[in-house]
Length: 341
Image 1: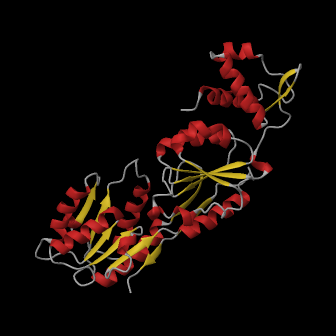
Image 2: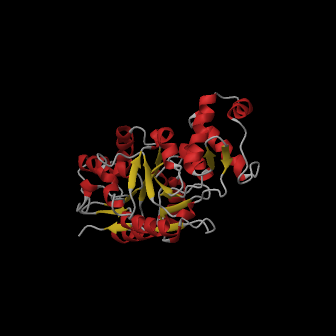
Image 3: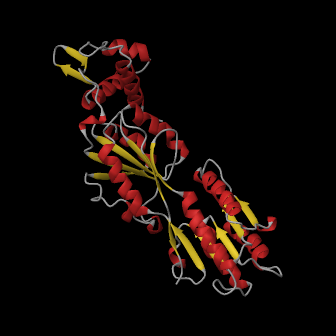
């Protein structure tokens, strides 16, 4: 939740935008606001100071505080970008964020903020001339997105599709089509799939799952019921043991495997070797997302996220996000299929 002063500032902005305070009109006294909103004088003072700094209010010593002649908007142009990400780019090399958003790549100053620190940074971010780019945000941050939207801060979501926010997402269907075509050619029509069960914690999985089944049917894949694995993947060791026994321990082991949760890829390969099976010789594997440890492994193809395209589309979004009358910005970027030589 926002601090009391920021929450009050949002309420006052709504008063202004709904016409309760006309441009140039003197706003109620601090004491009147304190009584109306049942808060402390300090909270009111901080909220008024925030809106004055943001351009919603003007003040004149000895005359009072007034509604500004024009409501601030993004039309002033973007001068600073905040990247909101729960991923620590300093330690999460596999996320490849340093190639996705280098601090110099967007043409304006960029600052990284963890969403957990949002309350602290909110007033700094929610100023005219700023924009926010969310890197794969969790659904619980929708409240903060709405707060920024109330302040007219342009926002772009990377690899998430919530409500009518601007977004740049992976084209799951196009990527899976290309990957499945490779797997079916290399291993035959019969295949297994290992996926994490879709839920609100991984909302993108709904679209990926639907795309997989649609394309599997369209491309003529045969999916034995005992080779379809949907698990919450909370216990990787347990899941690997159970899935591995089904895929590799029988008389006719799987020859084609699509792993849609890349965390399972390496454990399953280790498990296969325990049964005396080798990728490239005994079976083929396709993974959704790139796993650095598997680069160049015979028989293993990977669908790498198009980070360079994400960056290019984000630049394109920045060029037009100041236009408040434009339609929702939406771009789909196909994964890159990495095939072993």
